[in-house]
Amino acid sequence: MKEKPLRLSRGRARLIQVLSVAGDVIRIDDVVTALQLDRASAAQRLSRWAEQGWLRRVGRGTYVAASIDTMGLDRVLDEPWVLVPALFAPAYIGGRTAAEHWDLTEQIFKNIFVMTAQAVRRKHQERQGMLFSLKHIDERKIFGTKNVWRHQTQVPISDVHRTIIDMLDDPAIGGGIQHVADCLAAYLQRDDRDDEKIVNYAVRLGNRAIFKRLGFLVDRLSGGAELIRLCKQHLSGGHAKLDPAQDGSLIVTKWRLHIPELWGRERAIY
Image (tube, helix red, strand yellow):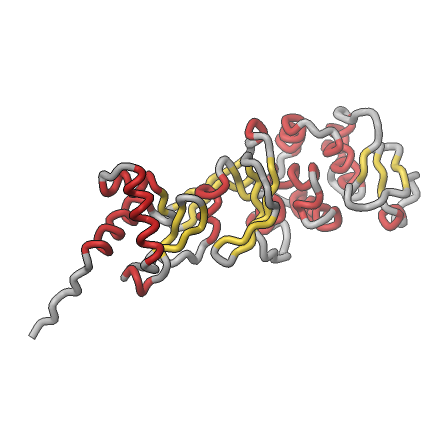
């Protein structure tokens, strides 16, 4: 005797219909499109599904499927990157998270670093058990990104060149200047290294301190003569800190840079 196929409830069948339209993350507009409802009714439907335990709210008007058991589908959120476009757009994954993605570092960071044009009221936010670290960026300065697929979602991430420039712009998002220096050293050994592109990105970002940090760090390595020359062309007046989070007791006049004493022990150039 053949078993009868499991019959889904009307509510669950409609939710699966919405999921087929929405993909990984469900928003009000997805319900409007899938079920031909007005926005108020769609929002109420999402809220009711969340109360029933079928969905989890991850942001305002934004939900994900709660579990495999409740949906009968492989829809649990096992890839938190898919939340970035839904919650923080216009945005991209950057900093130390992007450095890890591009194999610039072997360090593993628990938090996901996001550059967002949205107003940032809390720099650290937990969503679905995952910690997101946020930094505000002018939307006009969102460039040098690529899309990577996570499940059914395209997630913007800084390309390898922009990743380096962002971390030189603000070493804190790269895990501190020592880690940024290690990532830069790895970048300079890559086949896709592009000195002109990295300089052009720095020019577009508009922070001349990038050239001082970049020139100083490359000067300590071999194989960077052309990049050093390009950096010198873009030096500005005044002095910057190698790492704004650290005191700079020594001055490198060549690069107009304050550096911590520890960084000055290797070479007497001051």
